[in-house]
Every structure is written in C-alpha cells, then in structure tokens.
Length: 184
Image 1 (cartoon, rainbow, N blue to C red):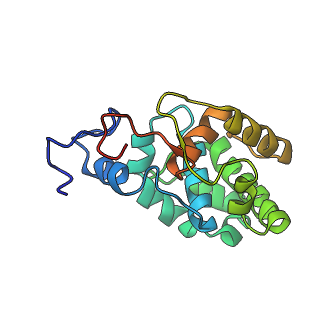
Image 2: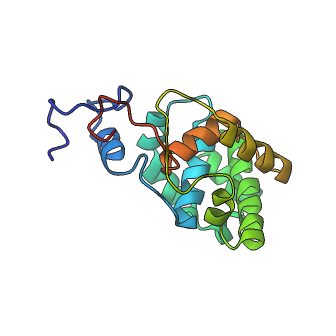
C-alpha cells in the first residue's frame, strides 16, 4: 500500500505532510513490541515527549539514537556530568537537563526491573492482558495508572499516567487506531 495515497484513512494525528510520521503510524505505532531494547528506547522517548508533541520527538529520533549510544542500557547508566553536558549541547535532541537525567535514572530502574522479572516485557505482562485493548479515546487508564504508580515508586521520573498510556499505545498493548483508520 502506498503510504502517500491520499485516499487512505489514518488516525487524525498522523500528519500527512510528514512522511516520517506516516511511516511511523503505518509501520510501528500500535504494533506489539516485546524486545527490551526497543521498549527502553520508546520509554525514554515518551518521557522526552512530556509537554511536547510526539511528532517533535519522532523527527529527532535518529539524533536521539546517536546521542544516546543506540539506547544501550549499559552505556546510558554510565553517563556522567561530562556526557550530560555533551547532550545538553546537542542541537539534534531535546535539550532538557531534567529529562536527560531522568533517562539515566529510568534506565537504572529499567535494568533493576529486568533483573527482578527477567525482562521489562515480563514486568509489563503482569499489568496488561495478552490481547491488545481496543480504545481510541482514552489518554490514561487503570492500567497506565497502576504502571505509573509502580514505576514512580521504583524511582522513575517523567512517567505520568498519560505518558505511560501513550507508551502502551505505541507498543501495542492498546489498539488505539481510530475506527475510520485503515489499521483499526
């Protein structure tokens, strides 16, 4: 299917003028993700998105991947003040010191969860049903509330219920495509 076909109905938020956004909507968003490396990347990016648009973050994703060493957890947890200063000077990413520090803290918590549950995916499975929940109207849920509360208790930052709900939508725990979207 030609992603640029103007007759294709997509979710209202998928900016038809941004090919990167259309590709993300059509090929990634809402598809099940079980790989911990991908889960960490998406979680970190969702935390950077707080207060901004996902399109803004998506447009900078490649720069984020480069700046954050491919989102390799063992590298991120070793970041020091010099690396934080380097990230703050990088015009390709969102330069927000508290979010950069949160990415480091959140990665440490993420790795602790991996040790406790075997994987972050297994951790999420205790909250989420096996089959995706169909819901295209909510911006949070009892599931995102519970995950947020647990992650916050464990020390994660910038992980409110709305951010976690968006993360769950992105990784396919929710099928949130709109009824008139061809992917519904």
